Length: 597
Figure 1 (tube, rainbow, N blue to C red):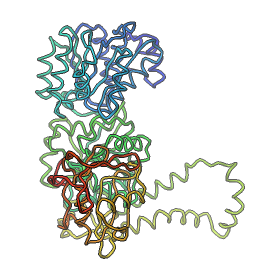
Figure 2 (figure 1 turned 45 degrees about the vertical axis):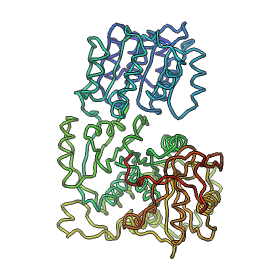
Figure 3 (figure 1 turned 120 degrees about the horizontal axis):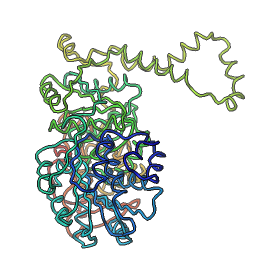
């Protein structure tokens, strides 16, 4: 018998979750479901992300709600669009074999008319982000007078994102006699205050210890020199041959720089930050979920609500400003009972921060050494040979080609063939790691902090055409631009000819392009104040040039002025004031390179 039946879950739901792979309840489900199934008490559940909280409150809701009625009876509030969609989809899957169950996901970045239409058709469970929910309440388009259950999921994250006032306003629209279920990974005083203000003698359940991290996560840290951070990061990635990770940075500029460097070095990586439109964000996340991206580079805010299975590593390229946020970062791995690694790259001065995090999560970090070049080469070689050994052979398709293959190899012994296959990988890594130094901080002290000329992934100076400057623009192929479209956009905005534009290197969510030195200011002026699909367009000097003190363009995200001209390209809309220079005008803001997230 499925143990979920013992918890009182009906057969139809158990059949659905069994198909989803639910074999036995997780600790939070086993403890919370019997309490919530009574429907009599307010509830506070403390457990890490990825421990099965959605089923812990979702399964009881399906038992308690009267689905013969078409009005809202349950409201689930969560911090992000991704989590909102995930919860709604999960609830629909749980209810696969039930009749007349209607769930609507209400979130920003999508057509509000579609969401209002679903609400008007009749819905029993509303899953929402606070901002969009307030919009719909403001339109008087929903009636919460019959709501019996309110779930606050990831409450600490909602408060970290500044939703406290929104939550208060939303809860004030619901009946006083409702039951409130609050789930959180940590219990800061703000979350405790919500429990005090909106709950009556709530039953509190803690899985693990308050504020602690997932027991299935290993916590590692590496002590390196600041100048070696990127090279050390790349060496760890090279050594971890099966890595599928999320890399956390402090700022959106840092995410872009790291993603750019990784793409240039041949890795499947992309960035996720606040400058992206919802369409861009969706495309990046689809690539990541499909595992066509190996590394997702993100800020804390942009990564909130990401729920992707089988993430092997969380890499803290920069430690979070608030040590409590480390718990949320590390919780992106080791989900659903899996194991994972959370590793941090720190300098000597940041070791104290590691100690503070240890106190919060109740676990010790293990100090690790940056692998030596020889270790990386060996690991990569063995991984390649393991793939060759385990590759699936399509006998039918390859048989016609075997005579030619055998003939071409007839003068080689088995040992020679193995050496040649191995050398394909060995020669490549040998070239990358020729004369690579020891990157561990204590070793760098002993060796006089030598440079790292042979290190793979070192941010080598780019080859930029003489007389040209390499620029960055936050538009790319996911905006449905071709190189020709981008060339036309640049020339039109800056009022320059195509001869003034050099190489165009288009990425997923951004593009690098060269422009003659004499026309750099025209490009900055031309794009200043420009918007694309409601998102500020930003142009900057790229890479080493900007870090080396070369002029960086001001933030092109100036306020939209009245009377600005509109123009469309590839279905997207550009806005801005047309100026006599041929550019789009706008008020200058402080450089986006200095703004966080």
